[in-house]
Amino acid sequence: MNKTSRLRKTAARVLLLLLAGVVVTGCDLNRYPTSVIPLEKSLESYEDAVAYNRGVMAQFRNRIGGTFAAPQEIMADCFNAQADWGNSAPGLHGWLELNASAGTFASCYQMYYSTLKNVNFTIENYNKVKETLKEKYDKTDDEDEKAELKGQMDDIDLFIGTACFARAYYYYNFLLRFGIPYDAATAGTDLGVPLVTTYDVSSRVTRNTVQECYDQIFKDLELAEKELVVRKPHAENSEFTVDAVKALKARVYLERKEYDKAYATAMELIQSGTYPLVEPTKEAFEDMWVHDTSSEEILILEISLPDEKPNTWGSYYGLSRTEHYHSPTYFPTQGLLDKYEEGDLRYGVYFYLAPDVKVFDTHFLNEMVLLQKFKGNPEYATIKDDPTYGRVPNGYHKPRVFRIAEQYLIAAEAGFYAGKDALKPLNALRASRGLKPVTTSGDALLRDIQDERLRELVGEGFRLWDLRRWNLPVKRMAPQEMKEAGALKDYLADGYFTLDVEPGTELYKKIVWAIPQHEINVYGEENLKQNPGW
View 1 (cartoon, one colour):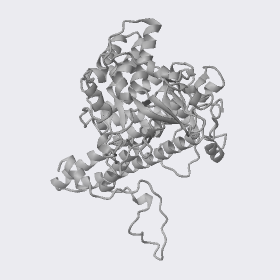
View 2 (cartoon, rainbow, N blue to C red; view 1 turned 60 degrees about the vertical axis):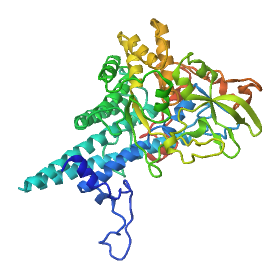
View 3 (cartoon, rainbow, N blue to C red; view 1 turned 45 degrees about the vertical axis):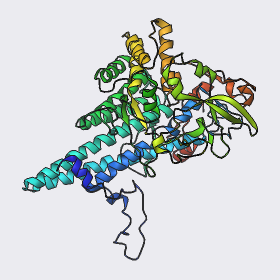
View 4 (cartoon, rainbow, N blue to C red; view 1 turned 90 degrees about the vertical axis):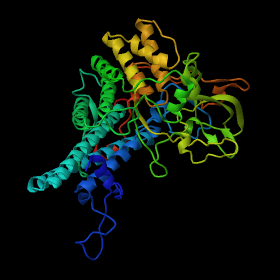
């Protein structure tokens, strides 16, 4: 029986509630209720492992995009909040009100930390399941049974690789938000995040060093690469592959400013030819960003309505069906829009000109440009026949994890700093986007690389970390101007359009997020020391 057949054989099995704790009550304390299983008994067999692997992928899908991308975008320089924004994501947009009790920080911290505990449990118990299968394999003389058990053990190895990749991804993103940025000279003492790799609900967590955290990330990536090698990489893969491992490595190397490694890893993916850049046509970009299909996708996850929904973020377009207007919380700045050159195919797909836009409770504006990059795939629309709008956007897209375009940008930036050919990957990406090549050098070339990264990745959750890596100020760009009613700034949240946070200032330290105060209260300042500036 091949691997696909074995997995299909268990597909109908009800997916266990991932790591749900239960309390057993009743007269017979030696029996479990028929509808629940205690945690310690929930992952003991091959069938349990199949179900848990599905759970790992489901949880991973819910840690991509949406609320895991938007906060760092609205903290950065590309969007303005309108005046009646309802205090959405309080403090993040204006910075001055930020404190260690911010709900966004607390929820993000808890979701990463709880997910890491879950994946630790699965890895530990996958290994126990494999040991049980190995014992059965060693005891039987039946060749058919041996073949079946060998196949199941191979599957468990694949599940372990999947879980290790997920853990590396989580720890990198956890560290990116809450750890001190990597500096090779001080990483051995700088504080990272709590490094927990075994499941223990009673553990008293402490912050490990940045170096220890990265060591664990690379350890997991090496194991993941070893186990995932059996999967053939291809465009639009929805499962983890060795190419996904390489894509994450390139991203990590760039963040650590290990430019030779970042360049080599990104170029390996580019030169493989597995993920060609799309042709410079409007249709190709609509396929990519509206219909979720593109040769550029290294890892793009599947969703299935109504149960497997992706994360969404509707605050960029804010459509009202009943009153037929848009009332977004965040507008693209004019400075952002001006970054797009004439002929850039991304502009017409990423943005759109909304005819009716509402700010405050009574003011209606005309022809405001809104971000529509994450508006939703028509295939997943729940309302497709609205009399005014037709398809009503709901933000449902297949979650994109890695695209080859990012690797071109990594190769360009890393190549610039490493003394490699930065122009070649930069201009290859520009050509695909309908733009002419640049011939700049020095500081002008670096600005071209930085601007291209902004144009390509806007809204995807990179911008704040990019500014930090480049040691640039968080200086909010100029707001859109309106043709009829004057400056948009007159309708924006007071003061937020003039944000200017310079490196080296006390406020700039908040570009590293606060350890949530609740966590410090629980575990003690001696265990969870707060980040500087909070």
